[in-house]
Length: 346
Ligand SMILES: [Zn+2]
Image (cartoon, rainbow, N blue to C red; front, side, top):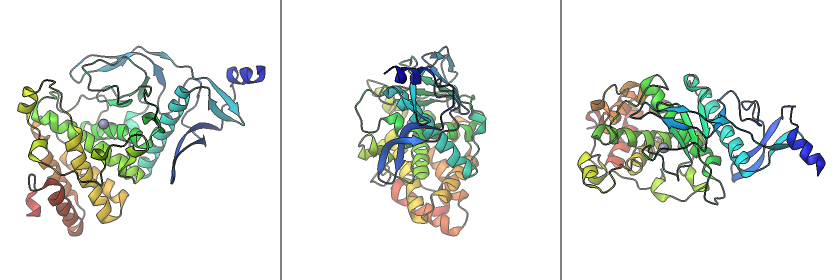
């Protein structure tokens, strides 16, 4: 055993690969993979950003900043130049970093520039204010305006922990991308600062919808959560259809015991609409290009612009030809059930 201890303590030569959760055609495996973006696995520092341990978000009302935190130490051994983490936390951190690297590279290959957000702040097990809309079940979150990924250890004994799910990581990156395309600056505060307003509810749901759509398109999987948790209500190839009750209404919040808006159901309707476009066109990359063109054209600058119908209008306008416009109109007709519509489709 002394040899093993030596290996764990002495890792001056950079490894060629790390052990991480890999997503393959038949699901996830734990296997070695190259990860050049992670320059030093022992401190989790690299070109995407350095992971800090602890720390907390300070400030409020969209002006949060990450502060504190200390350097992280990840114990690992070298097995034929593969960094093998000594514990589950290390495996989760390697996996998160690997999925983030893959998602960034996949977007770069499609001409999507995320460079303004990197290096990004990454916090492992930070103190999370109860006022921040991060539930302990989220495990991974992106704090808008702080340009920060929050990573929390997975309490549940899942086959694929949420942090190790490439779709979950892509979803969180989706929040960063959506914000960047709208605000132009990863450190700008959210466009709508009152989460309990109609525009704030739309903002939250369109954020979730965009993040789910991005993850599904990058992985070409409308049920990317399934590997970790079965949530049929979040399936993008399911029956998510708009209803009156889903339309944002601040009065419903005022009447509720816990005045926190749940953005996911409405978000899934929008993400499913985007998935319908991918199915109809059989073109995930073209669908992502259309989605981003719509976001850019819409680019809400003020609260009143943050509205699902305006977004649908931008989606229709961004369609590259009449054929794509018809596909957009068909998807709107199915998913919005007559409650939201676009002038050009009638
Ligand atoms: Zn989200």
